[in-house]
Every structure is written in structure tokens, then in C-alpha cells.
Length: 260
Image (tube, rainbow, N blue to C red):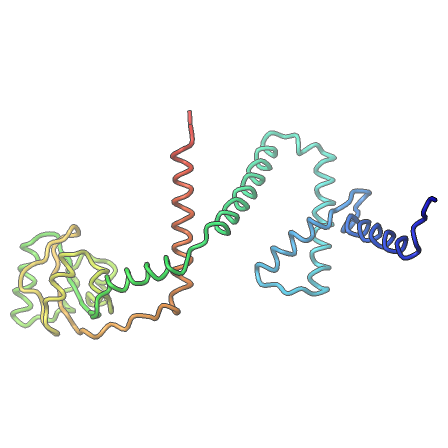
């Protein structure tokens, strides 16, 4: 005997079909052209990523923006602007940029930086920093004889800050040669090697040669290094390592590419 669906089954089917119809319904229609809801969701996601909160005002603003874009797009199409070669080239570039962003976002998602990698980077940096922080001043000159002349003046009682007028370092010249609190790893090795050997308040009695020229270094102060905790710098390290991983991946793809 032929069976007919029950009222409950008919109701469920109707509800399912109605839901499907609503999901497929356009977000808005402009001059007969439908704006898909997926386009609105993409724009809403962009706004959320920038910190916007869901609200009726946000939804209305997005709707109005999409309508305005559709109106202008239709007018541009009427004029046949999409057929111009330069416009097509720009559209191709825009599409390519979107695809690249989607690919890199997917790569980051599938190749995240691990806590072990971040911890290893933290330990490496911390070991390079050492246990002390130094506050040096320096005078940079071009020749060894110029550096020796400055040392002679210092030994004769001249003020270090006054002699920095002869320095070739524009970043510290007008600050009395001051370089601020730093760890030795921030300087080139000949500089850092000479600096850490100095006593507080003393200056180098022989010129220090580096790739930049000849230095005369004064050590103003030294203190125990208080390195930031792992948790304090973890976000920055994670971001940097993730960027390095992405750049390495791009380089690998570029090297494998057959370019003629």
C-alpha cells in the first residue's frame, strides 16, 4: 500500500526548504542584480578583524557600502570600462593579491610556530645578551691618528662630550656620543670587546678599529641585565618567527619555480 508522508514529516521538509531558500536569498538587490550574502560576510569579517563590534549600525553601514559599490560597478560596466586593458590588468592584480593573502593565511594556519621554537629563540637571544648592560659613549673618526689625538686631549683633561663634535656618527654626535643602555651583542665585536674591558668612568687609551672607522669609547655605567620574561616577549617572538617561516617558504617556492 502506498504510504503518504506524515504531517510532521511534511512540516520538517517545508522548514528545511524554507531555510535553504533563506540561505540562498540575496543580501540586497540593486537594479535587479543580487548582492550575495557571502560578499557581505566577507566585508563584515574585514571590519571585525579591525576591531569593529557587531551591531545594527555596522550591518547597515556594510549594506550601504555594498549597494554603493554595486551602483558604481554597474555604471562602470555600462561604459565598458571592464574591457579596457589597463582596468583588466588592475583587476588581475587585485585578484592575485587576494589569492596570495588567502594562501599565506592558510600556510600560517597549517604551519604554526610552536612553543618549543619560541622558547629556543628566547633562550638563544638571552644567551647572546649576557648578564650585564652597558652605557657607553663614543667618538667615531676616520683615521687612527685622529683617534689618538682625541685620546691625548682626554688625557689632558678635555671633556668627552665636547670632543664628540668631531665624531662622524650622526646618531650620537649631538648627544655627547651617548649610545644608551645596551648589551654587548648590539655592537660590532671590536667595539663590544673593548667596551666590556673598561672600568666604569674610564675610556679606551688606544683607538678601536671597526668597519665604520676608529672609535674612542667611554664607559659611563654598567648594571646587571634584567631580561624580560618569556611571557612578556612571547607574542613578539612568535610574530617574528612566523614571518621568518613565511619568508623562507616564499624563497623556497621561488627557487623551485621555472622562470624563463
